[in-house]
Image (cartoon, rainbow over all chains, first blue to last red; front, top):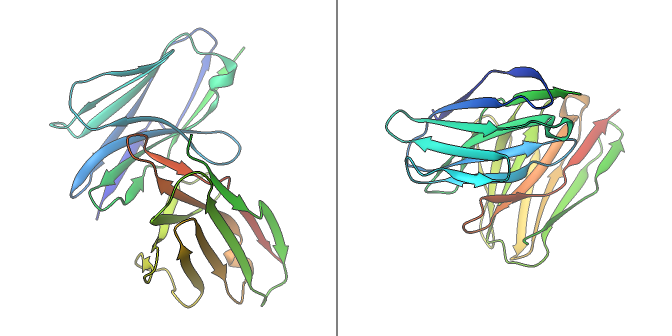
Length: 110
Length: 114
């Protein structure tokens, strides 16, 4: 059975801090690792990682995948209160099926 | 960008009634739509995969007769919760794959069965 584990489950930081969110996966027929941000409703797409070692960046967010260790991290630098959300990672298969982790709830205090 | 429109966003129904949730891909064709359920403070649990013009594929433990999925066209997939019970109360959300950009989600439906 496919499994995705995220850590920590929750995190409280202050504005300006840098955070690292972790995601490990065991997914058969793995295709890509996906990161999402979920605030009140639907998750919004952040990154799709397919190749090892290639960092993807979007503003203060960046992510990288290690396919040997079956691991990915999501970094957020200079955090802001608007970064407070649940961050989900998902392992995607060749069949297009995604298995989600339980998410990391990030709270950024002013 | 690719948008999936989901409605209703919120529905309250009586026990024993059926509720239909629709997901439409607005500016692209979704041959496959994924239906998830999310419990409070929990992650998304895949319920079924709907394929345009064929039967849906259900995940283990999901009752096919209870959660009816129809994918009649390339832009519309529906999930009907039949004979709803309070334990069916949950957040239901659909998603479709967008090539090179992961998946795009509908805005979700909060179902409350009273």
